[in-house]
Length: 284
Ligand code: FAD
Image (cartoon, rainbow, N blue to C red; front, side, top):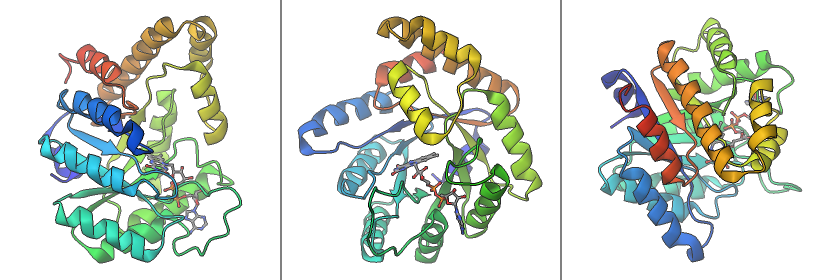
């Protein structure tokens, strides 16, 4: 089913994310994680795409596995270091498999990259997929602005161009203060972007990892959350409990404020996805 149709069907949508294996060596463990997450029956599951496209076959395989589970998959596809031929090949395979949804991404620019850029921005890929036809297209957006953008305003201008080229929905970068999402939503609507904007929520279970991720993405951690990390970051089980509770609270607040769709960055961790789903069992 197309993602916007799922959003129309249900008052509160909850989806999860998995990432593909990097090599055959961890293929089986990823499959087990994917099966665990699929068994929770989320409304859809997204599958990330390795930067550089080197693991594209794995992404396609995992997407197919999710589909065979009877769950709607959302296949990520990044373009910055891909040729048109490679992109068309992946699109052809996804179409053959009956996949309906693609999240079109630029990908992070590899260090010392000197390749022949056939796609400079995600919007080039959105146009390619739209021209190919037959897919529902999503894009990424950034409530605090993309780190390469001079201002949030210019980032939203680029976002509008991306949506106008064919995005049917957007998913946000993770955020830890819901007010950032609400304020972003109002700016985006003022800019004339009316597609659904799925809120991306990350249950933090590893303090060092989130500090690294936030430094890279330019995102901020609210003081309230920093205190949690300072207090429990050194004790993994306590950090996991606190991270799940914090994410659950964010999700409940989003639903309470009328947000229809929340995407959980579940990072191949079925046990965390399950705890979040259990916490929301009477809400969903
Ligand atoms: P774009 O939309 O192209 O934006 C990138 C930058 O270029 C922004 O600063 C934007 O303002 C600017 N820009 C856009 N158009 C123009 C223009 N015409 N002129 C000037 N500037 C412009 N990465 C992966 O490798 N694999 C994944 O599976 C993956 N999944 C993700 C899922 C989500 C929900 C999110 C939020 C990110 C994901 N990423 C993934 C990371 C993403 O690839 C990076 O954040 C990347 O740096 C930007 O990708 P984008 O698609 O947002 O790019």
